[in-house]
Length: 457
Image (cartoon, rainbow, N blue to C red):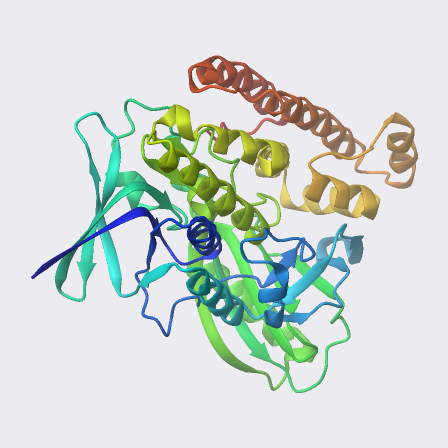
């Protein structure tokens, strides 16, 4: 049996980007469907650290008031870095409003809000292919619902299907500027458990981070409440997952606050640890959220970026459909808005990821322990820091043994600043992208040479 549907816009994936996109399209009066592979009961159940930076600001399509029922801990106000190699615990202030959420409840509230706006949700539907016209314009998707073939025809498809999206494997981007410079090495795997502890933890106001025993990842402990902890780890996809999961298991077993704890949920996922896509648009097609690298590459935080990316993608799609022009040029403004809002910052942050791949883990931990907490926070969240020569001299005096690492951080910071300045000149038309990319790649070559890191792209 075969079924077909027609919509103005089809969104693939009922995550943050997908729900904000669908609500935005529906609010503008266009017909929109969200195609989700999970069941209605499981939709919204996504592996996540549950920490949310920027909890005070969400796009109006689904305002904060409609989802704040999922905010379980709004008392977190700083990061706590445990550095065993240095026998140090480093408290780092985090700018902006923080919260820890119940991710499943948050996901359900997003879906409810998008449905209330008028979006149709189609569950248990696995997308298998993308349909394209003779000129390459994306015209819809094909998939399976239960055992039945199903087709969706649409003026625009928005890809909110997450990291390493199948849609991008199936789409011919040869006549567009869509970013296809994507590989597994630019992504990490994340695994988390929800753990109930018998007594309140002392650090329920902090997001706790700790390096794994290998340089490939880090552990986290994020308190949903003072007795419900999201315990997890992130690691590069090139590493063996079971060995790193054992690192988490051993650490849990040695922490006294977890004695007698009960695990209530386990889940894993992939997420980008890379710069945003150079372009996330093609004729009739836009990608948003994890599907376009819209994640802070140093912290893995992606909720706020996905919300805004989904909104911007939908707003551009609505304009394109209304003007009967869904070309790459007509959708290009979406790229500009992403780069202006957070893309340039995330590209700068990726430079610190590049640095970390070329630094010995013990030296890296020593470097972190040597830097002033507020300066490290600036680097991790804004992409730059006011780490000037005078502060460098003061820090070096107090950090004997790590002078070369601190100097390298200072030089990396300067190159990250240059890169963000270049992203501020992101082209206003698709034809100018190759020249902009060549100039950006020259800056990246300097970064690789200075850090000694292997090229990432």
